Amino acid sequence: MLDMLKPLLAAALCLAPLSALAGPEAQESKFWSSEVKAGYLPPVAERLPEVPLVVNLAAKGREFGIQGGTLNTMVTRSKDIRQMVVYGYARLAGYDQNYRLQPDILLGFENEGNRRYTLKLRPGHRWSSGDPFTSDDFRYWWEDVANHPELSPAGPPDFLRVMGQLPQVSFPDETTVIFEWDEPNPGFLYVLAQARPPFIYRPAKYLKRFHADYAEPESLEEAIEASRVKSWAALHNKYDNMYKFDNHELPTLQPWINASAGKKIRHQFVRNPYYHRIDSHGVQLPYIDTVEMEIVSPGLVAAKSNAGEADLQARGIGFRDIPILRKGEKDGSKYKTFLWGNGTASQIAIYPNLNINDPVWQKILRDVRVRRALSLAINRRAINRALYFNLAKPGAMTVLEESEFFDPELRAAWADFDPSEANRLLDEAGLSKRDGYGIRYLPDGRLMELIVETAGERQEVENALQIITDDWRDVGIKLVMRPLDRDILRNRVFSGSAMASVWFGWDNGLPQAYTSPGYLAPTDQVFLSWPKWGQHFQTGGEAGEAPDMPAAQRLLELLHNWDMAGTDEQRAAAWREMLQIHADQVFAIGVVAGAPQPVVVSNRLHNVPKQAVWAWDPGAHFGLYRPDEFFFEDGKG
Image 1 (cartoon, rainbow, N blue to C red):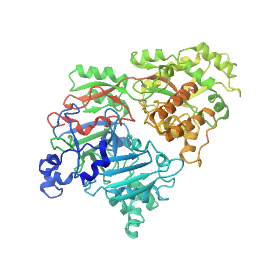
Image 2: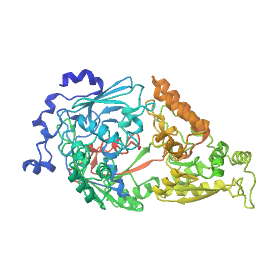
Image 3: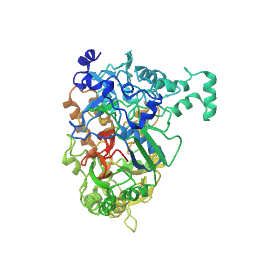
Image 4: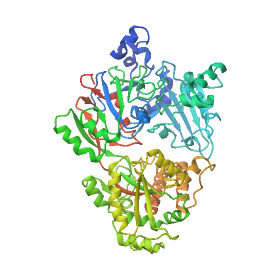
């Protein structure tokens, strides 16, 4: 069978010799040995796929590890146990550390002109439950979930639509899945590698018991009543939560499985006995047996890390925590603090809401002169000096230096501290009348009080806004800061209630030609400057508002050009024009970029890179660096 696959997979596959995959050479973990002896689990050689993914750690400059131990880490909300899916980074195809796409769960893939994608599964691959992982799991998702009107009223996800058309999906055999479009869909494989993957497959055997087309009606009705939901579809959706990762019974392909039922302060995740990756010595990954994730108050993460209560921690700590973490190192704590680069386009960005319901404020915020003035009135160097010890990079929001599209002129666009020019632009925009304290009046007689809403999760944001408050007051604008819960903040922005908000810049500040520029166009409500335009795109016009600004319409045209492009040069041209539009229009006001991200690492934890990039996408935070290859030097956590 392998000989038949080699021509198809070509350079996409890196197969180990069959002798290296023979059962006797695979090593059983101590963690599961008692279950194997008792007959509850088959031996490891029978649990692995026929062709596991063999990791040559020596070629990666890493150490071969020892199985065992418990890794402690922290999150600040119960829903963030989903970070185990992010960090685990088992994807159909995923990025390596050079941002090259490689098969992972897949044995291989073939791309024919960005129109036809053939996905090959690993023969003998199994879910964590031991059930076979086959093309039937893709079929179930496509036919019985994504295209089922009760489970997915909006239909399959947007990334599968090209010019409004869905693909033809076929399943020639149990290890082959084919997606085919009439027009190119160049971003298809890259979406599969995201930090939050789309999961175009489901554990069919498990979920069919909750599906009206498969389950016995009496059993299904009993389950609906027991779960206190209103319908079988609500029941199915409750248990079908592969990204949330909060159903401990739901089979997974991730390196660790959820072993904790219900909501807890401390969640435990144990090694997946059927995980598809092994090192070239035959040791099944992950090396670490157990991950314990504690839910703590946001203000305690740095203190508990300083006290040595985390073996691996970056989430919940920021630049301002570096001094206390360094002090902990000097005081003899058993950890070290690495400073990774940051992959977001801006550490702090202010998003004027161009879709605000207030017609007066909407007209003002849509005036590019006002947005440029707001940007020019910010003393970014003072913020960098006061909050980041001059280690960040002041400037407008654009891509980072590591991207092929970086242009220093775009970072400098409307980003110099120039209160005189800001005043001139605001006067020119018809906002010249002021009260006795110098605050400008709106055309309807209200004072120009701009409410900027925050998630209240990062002290550096509040500190920066305090500096910006003084800067904007000097040009006649009163900034009012309003901290809110993250979910409330987003709902206010999405509904058009918020004037402006603060968040990170674009998640992906490291795009290449193959990266979809969809997040630069009004395609998603999560870009906080145009939520209703994003809603309009996401719902096919059923909700939200159609973009009515020429620059936003041009961004959509350029996104279409990128989608239809046949060469990297054409895709790069679309990217560059889109970035230029953002620089000129100041749709989001970047403040600083590139502030180092502290990463706390136990002295006994190996294979964690000292220099790396902390990025949501691409990168999945720790995921890109493969935590399943991290290990404790003595095998004990």
